[in-house]
Length: 283
Image 1 (cartoon, rainbow, N blue to C red):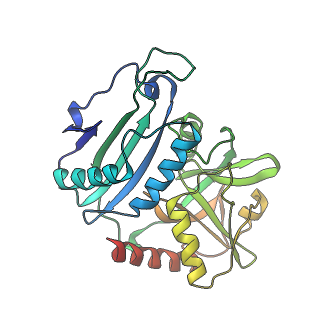
Image 2: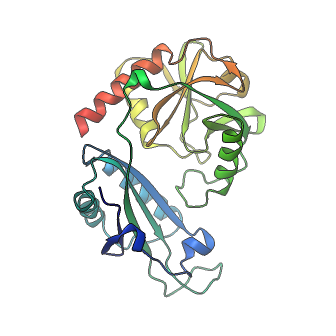
């Protein structure tokens, strides 16, 4: 496939795409983004991603330069022009290019960028290897529900996890309350019930998180959108991560302590299977 970019209505090869050096996303992180998975040449849950994009834009007082219908059409064109079969669409909107100033510019026009990248086809479920996570303090700001390009705390935490041989850093706040991962939401089975942090300002409620919550309810598996602490996580029977790219990803241990059930645990395994069926049905 060909890696294609689209900037403010113009298509180009990704290697030739350019934005202004004074773009506020580059200078100040003044922007928002979304990542949409492509399976078999079709975007997965695109509408849900675009609705979250609208919420993020409203939260930072940013007017989208294109309508949802225009964005939807462009996503289809990107997939077609690139011949993408398995991959992802990255889209980013900034407040535009203007002289560097902390105040919002009066005359800047928002910049919208999209591009498509190829990914390896999804592995068979039996080939997915459970990974290990570590826990770290959540040093991010208090508006994590906005999908903003300001990701430096996430990067630093994930780098620490990688250096420790872990797939993800699971973040916690005061009192040891687990929030989410640097790029994922966290689920754990505690005393027979699935728990995950509620959708507050302390987490970014992932599209995959929402799908998994719906699957759990459909399967009549007890689930609570209720915070849990580090001790409860470390003594859980099983745990997993969810994200657009990771899908449903089982954890075998946290901080070197294995979970009670062999990973993937029974609930996680069931979710992985049903989630894959959701992909087939949608794409």
